[in-house]
Length: 396
Ligand code: G3I
Image 1 (cartoon, rainbow, N blue to C red):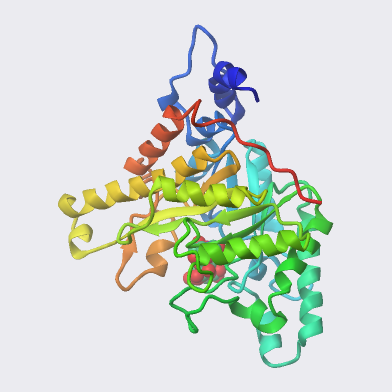
Image 2: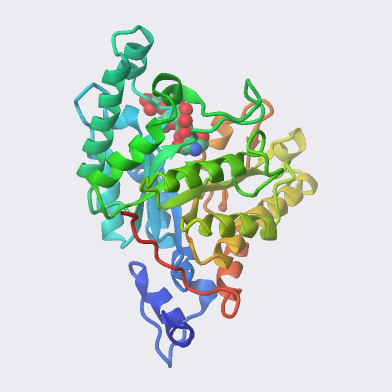
C-alpha cells in the first residue's frame, strides 16, 4: 500500500477488516479508542493475535472468553491442541477435532491462524517417547515418524495456516548444562541437529504457501554477539546457515515471555534485533508475548503499592515489543500468550516463587494498563516512522 493510501484508508480498513466492524464514513469517523487491538493493528497490516485455550473457548459458563477472542484479535494460535500429544495421541490415529474447531472459529471471525507447533521436545505422546527410550523405535524409524507427522499435519491444514512454527525451542539456555549454547532436547539427542532442516523441507513440501517459522524464547535482543552464550546470535547463525543451505525458512518467531523482575530490553534494542533478522530476508513475529510478575505476599494481599509498579512494568514491556514490531515492516504479527489472567499458563508453571499478573486483562476481563498502552501504541504510530508491513513470500 502506498503512503498516501495508507493515510487515506488506514482507519477505514482497520474498522472494516475484523468481523462485526462497521466501516467508517466521513460523517461517522471512527473513534480509535473504541476499536479492538485487531482492528487497530490492521491499520499497519499488523496482525494482533492471542493463544486460545480450547476448553475456555467452549465453556458456556465463560462467554466473555469466546466473545473477546472473536472481537479483540485478528489472529489466533492454538495454545495446546496442535501439539503432537493432542494431534496424534495414538500412533497413526489423528485427533484433529479440537484444532479444526479453532480453524472454523477463525474463519467465521475473519482471523488468520498461526500453526503451533510441528516439532518440539515437549508435549510429545507417550508412545513416541517410550518407544525411543526403550529402543523399540530406532533412528531411521524416528526420522520416518517425524516426516510422516509433519506431512500429515501440514497437509491436513493446507491452505488454512498463515504461519507455521515448524521448529520450537531447539536451542539451550546459558543455565543449561553444559552452559555453552547447543541444540537441546529429544530431537537433537536422537536425530542430531539435521532434523531442523529436514522439518522445514518436509513442511514446505506439504504446504508451499504457508510461511515457515523457527520459534524460540529469550531471543528478543542480541547480547554479547558470541553464539556460545548469546542465544539470539546462535539463532541468527542457525537461520543464516539454513538459508545458505537453501532450506525454506521464512521467518523467526520471538516468543516474548518476559518478567517484570528482569532487566529485559528497550525498544531500540529489540527493533535492532528484528532489523538484523529482516536483513537475512526473513519475516519476524512476536508469537507468545506475556509479562509476568512475582506474586509477593503484598501483591496477593492486594497492596496497591506493590501491584501498581508491576502493572506499569508489565505494560512497558508489552509496549517495548509492540513498538519494535511496528518499527520494522517485516514484523508481521504480535501474539499474546493468553489475554486474561483467568486463563494463563503462568500461575500453574511458576509456583516457587508464585508468579502471575502476566496478561493484558485481569481475571474479570477488565483491561489493564498493558492493554491500553498497546492500543495507544497502535493508534499513535504512523508515517513517517511506521509504515504497513512488507508481506513475506514463501521461500522456494
Ligand atoms: O491435557 C491435560 C489434561 O488432561 C489434564 O487434566 C490437565 C491437568 O493438569 O493437564 C492437561 O495438560 C496440560 C496442558 O497444558 C493442556 O492444558 C499440562 O498439565 C500443562 O503442563 C500444559 O501446559 C502448557 C505448556 O505449554 C506445556 O509445555 C501450557 O498450557 C501452554 O501455555 C504452554 O505453551 C508453551 C508454548 O507451547 C511454547 N513456548 C512456551 C509456552 C509456555 O510454556
